[in-house]
Image 1: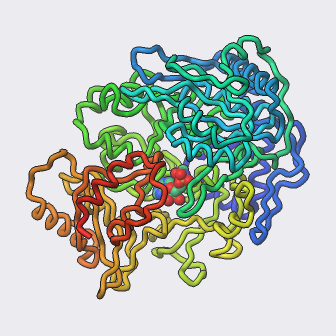
Image 2: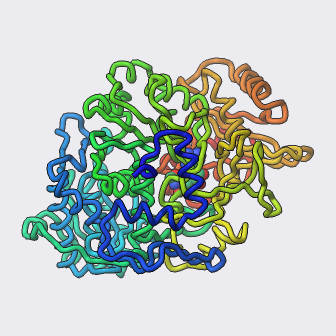
Image 3: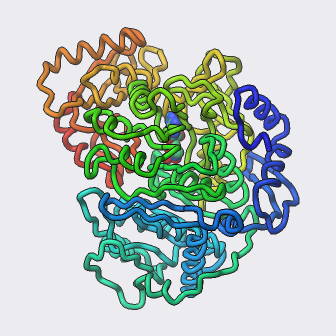
Length: 636
Ligand code: 7RM
């Protein structure tokens, strides 16, 4: 079917216009042709953003694992579904076929059912990037149980909060994990968490590192012996399209994490459609997304999107720096990766290192390069384009959120001409709008505002677990009748979108609205600069002034810092104007980041504003140690 696989920009516009003219007809056609439904829907869409209540394919019956697995057995039984690349390059990669994955999922589902897990029950999954992680998600889905994956880098407290918030009675965990040179004792973290989780009856423990663990009697069970006894088939539990598939927590700017609830039918249709189009996926491709399944990117574009399409999806256990900074490129060469999807933070980290790490590998298999998670700065975009893509692989800058379930704004590779730092055009079915401060839609092109979406799409999160009011307040109250993303964006002369960052990253200096991203872009152009983050701090005259935190490429940079400061401000003046010059520039060893690689400007803002009494929870940071260092050397 033509509109499932867009190949030219004119075709994109045709499909797009159709999708907007009648979204229900558009999505119904896609849903009809590409999936296995046990019963078709009574109604394609019903919605009311004021409640808010959104239903796609209501009344339809299905099981998503039949779409990810069973449906492929007739044609792709021996095709690799999951290609596992272990942390240690000397350990052999595993090719798990669709047939084998089907059997593993059924076995695991049988074990879960034996432990009392049934439809609607919440199961917490806290595992490293090993095949059993993907298998656990699917095993839950096989039973109609709701998975809640918690990234296995989170602390015991963060894990306990998430387990308790949705009352998980079973946890799937492991003895430990390998991350580069390190072996991490995950079971101890789980044990500590479970002391605060009276509702958890059972924990199933995957053996990965073989490290010593304490097994709590009556609660902890090794998984493997149970799997060995379980049958390799299991009938799928048929659920309603609007039954929950999973909960995934996303941190709010304040308060406790929000358990975003995604339902089954719409999520399946949207992730399958966007995977196929945004990556221009073909049957023979080997697709690799470097995210962890603990994030939405992993859920949608390692597990569900690829598997519903019958793709080969790579799972990588390790880190980009082990055994050296060539690891990503070694894997691309070894498995002849065709689509590669990563985050700006990883690109910047690799761009700091010697070019030989990239150039020593044959990357000619690559056809599409993706980026997600943050605005990608121009420097990083060009490095990715020149050295990884060799100017031949289009870069898709994909903008989306945990809440949106799938990619919302992205080029269609080989159709949409790309421009660095622009996510470009909405996916079919997505209707973005820009809003001004007074809640009025800003029409026309060459404008900037707050990004909202005015019509539902199939994979929008339906609620926050246990707190529908917070869902309404957070996303549907700022611009009644619209979903508010929390991001700022500009729309250029041809209608391309550029995401400028969270709106709390907009700084008003002497009455000028300045987004952090363009200023950071200018700074990052300086050859000595690796990364930067800009925040505002109170200023008597300007209202706010700009404070820049800058990490240099060579550690222990010996050049004169005052000269560097001048050069950086000159670049900003050249690129944006003197209004955007920085009042203070602090050179730092690193920038505080979330585990998914987003710079935590909230913390930097507090330091710049001399307000460090309450930095909020920094325990979930990737590098909490840099915070103290930044405070010690603060110029505030
Ligand atoms: C997929 C994911 C969502 C927030 C979002 C943005 C930022 C993500 C881009 C981006 C600019 C991009 N989910 N963001 N992708 N900003 N360009 N291509 O990251 O829930 O963890 O984060 O991430 O601010 O609102 S998320």
